[in-house]
Image 1: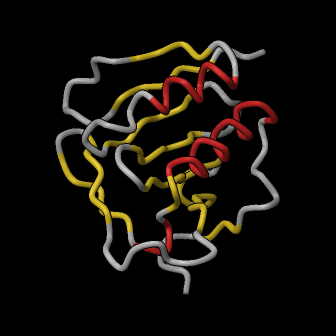
Image 2: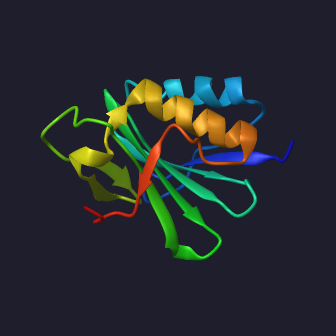
Length: 134
């Protein structure tokens, strides 16, 4: 399996990087962020994909960018809005605001990211949209 690295991008200094050893290990690492301030993590090492993960607290988000950059950028969308408020995730010392339609329960975020790690593909049970598509 290709080596993947999960990087904590919540602060300006990228100090925490974790080499991911398996899908279960990835789930454990993501779960460890559940009681921390919301932040963005990058999962890198999957050929052609950069997976940005909003995590921390009850809700999270999954944003995937393909080889063509933002042209192939997609958010996992919620089948129903779980909150009426946007969430702010720390990203390089700034706030990355995510609208309610892209906020998913934290457990769903972990399922989606583990699937992408395991299969190197986007899950078919998730609806994907470009940010701003309505």
